[in-house]
Image 1 (cartoon, rainbow, N blue to C red):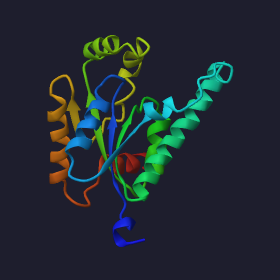
Image 2: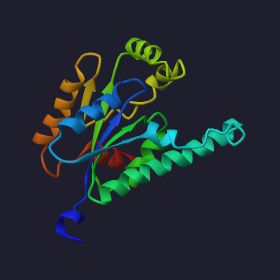
Image 3: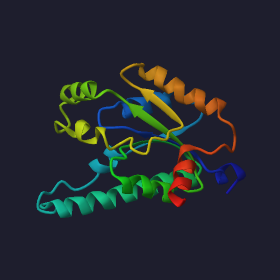
Length: 193
């Protein structure tokens, strides 16, 4: 393995509700960042699973399967970064255990946490227009996703274009102080205190 392969990749972690614009922002970042990046989406991981109703016939079985999938998703992020890949993550931290698991699994990785915001009315409009989501998912997640309240960068996809939001993330990456604690570092330290 050469020296370049031994360097860990960076993680840009987009957190927001369903329909907040995370996937569009991830695509814009991949198109405009200066090095090779990969988009890892929790929705894509979810889509890989079985759709047999007889296997997921109770809320308990569904929750168990989704929990295992999400824990695997978190570990795939760490694995990609550990192998030297830069990763843009598209996730919904709507349950406290998801953030706690990510803080543990991604310890030692360079993670930039981006809050992807959008007003509830716009989320509901987008959800209806998409037609591929159950109505009410964004509203259910709205008060849960950002409860930790600490980000390295925050964007509002209703107030700014996808290109402007991507530029805000790129500008942060270009101007951040090397070695300065990130939101993940602060959240991890706060949890330990």
